[in-house]
Length: 592
Image 1 (cartoon, rainbow, N blue to C red):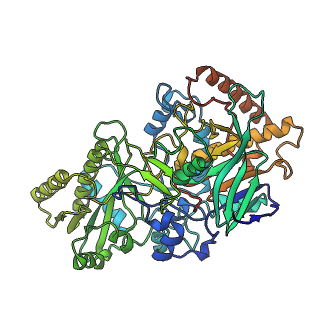
Image 2: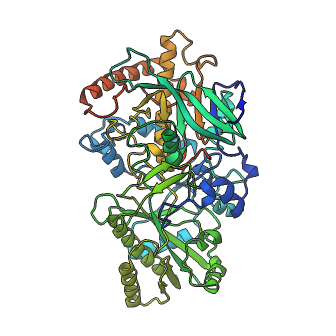
Image 3: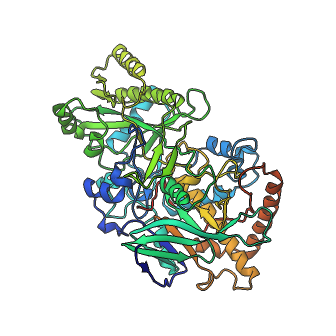
């Protein structure tokens, strides 16, 4: 039993971080220490069958610190699916203007606020040679292609290509240099790093509550810091922002039993095509790594919106070596020596299939990820590989290869030979352990929805099973986002933060406290996870009339939902406006 750490926090909001809180100038920019200290399980995490590698952020700022700065808003067809009143999720907050909406939704406003705060813009984006190859190849073939918004101050900087290993210059406007810095400047947030959260604490809910209330009420967390036990009591609420891998594990360790915790895990399975442009010195590892996208096959083979995006990845030698097939040491060495002339494209699949993540104390990784790519997704990915091969060939590649274990290399510009090569790749398909498949996006393992029989949290981010316990990270996404999920994750978290701030303000008004002034005594918010949350205090100052109006609307909605709930193993509970902070990241964790 570790000794108990007793400490009084001066700030009303505590942000718990599982890793050392590095400042940008302490970042590594070197592969080995970055993988060891900034990625989940040192970048060695896989699914249980070992045929899919999973890259997830495990550092201060989470995925926004080590991702590739590609900022794509939530696609309209995804929002329509989430908002469909006859669908699985039934979340009108995601409605789009094309569905009869008369004004912008809370999600619209949050997404606009996020894009502005992180400086995401398509203007002035400078493409490196690999991204230019995608644009050139698509133009020649008549395929769709466009520039993607970037949250980099300078997309032309050579070091921009190294931000997956840290960012000493602060070029990328991730959460570490935006929202977490904002939190520090308020004076209302304190950080606890190297902290492994063990469980959420709770008590029985007050008797005589609303008919839709849960049976439990969150009271704080228990954690371990450098061998000491840490307990934090939360007087207002607890927010979990540990990402789609660690958030469900913490909830499972805490004893929550909603059957959807850990399920519906989407991974955006990826496979790649590598091309060589002999003597061109592509240097794809320099400059902004992912500044373009092609939506040519986004609708998917069934035209249901479950297709793939075609993008350009970061192609450092270490990343390439982990994906190219092994045909002997000499062959791998030859490939790596040609890295300066290499460019790559990836197929980013919106997965039909989903997986399950479970806490597993006996597993060296601390968790189990059960996930298999479905046949529908494999078919779509093969379509994407077909297009990638043709794009790179049109862009002038001298040699093209897939990541199949069987050698698939194309070395001629002859059209008939290219067609034959594509057909060979199609026939090879995507079979278990026969081709490199990866994931850098984890989503949906504690999804948002309209009922506890289909989801873990309501549209305000509050758990059906426990009052005052909120989730604000990528685990709440109802499905795979069909695009790089950073902007979607940030926007949902911002929306949750805004609603919770309004709720807390209204509670203060009703209690006779000064309007818009968060209190240190009796008004603190306890948060934990990977320090990917900041107080939405700027929202907390919103006009009280708006807060009262929103509170009334929520009251009406929760009463309506109470009458619509189908019978199930959990009592539905009231829908108060949720979320304590703007919690960021696609894959943030509480390292064991």
